[in-house]
Image 1 (cartoon, helix red, strand yellow):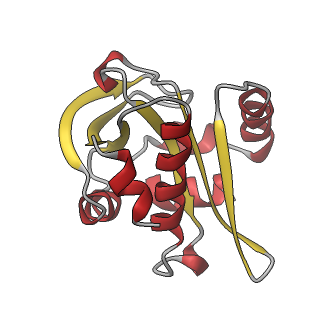
Image 2 (cartoon, rainbow, N blue to C red):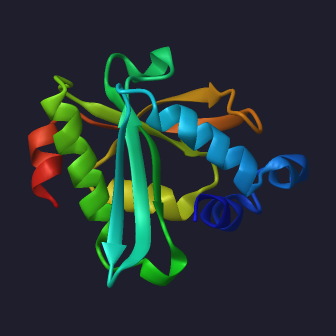
Length: 157
């Protein structure tokens, strides 16, 4: 799912060589390392027994986050879009970060990913800056969205 959603989302945003370099084996190796790290929070969403989406959060990976917990991934499969899955995943990640002692969260959105920007703004996110993500595949220019009230965000679930 990660590869399929990534390719769908970034097909017009990422350089062609980044899309060509992404495959299931590469993503699986990265996920195995990520899931072995106890600082990471991984959540999955199922609908009728099918994987509908997933989210990953943990310590911030860039100083731009200013100590906020970072939502690193929030992906929902195309067949499950517009069913509240993304909202519930974001709320659950907010609750999990609050349990880990974070007071706020942030996430990066690649410049030009207008559907994601609209979604995060609808969820109460505010632009709090920008940064360049070195990423494993390409250096993307990202907008930083922030939520400074995790309890309110968690209640949206």
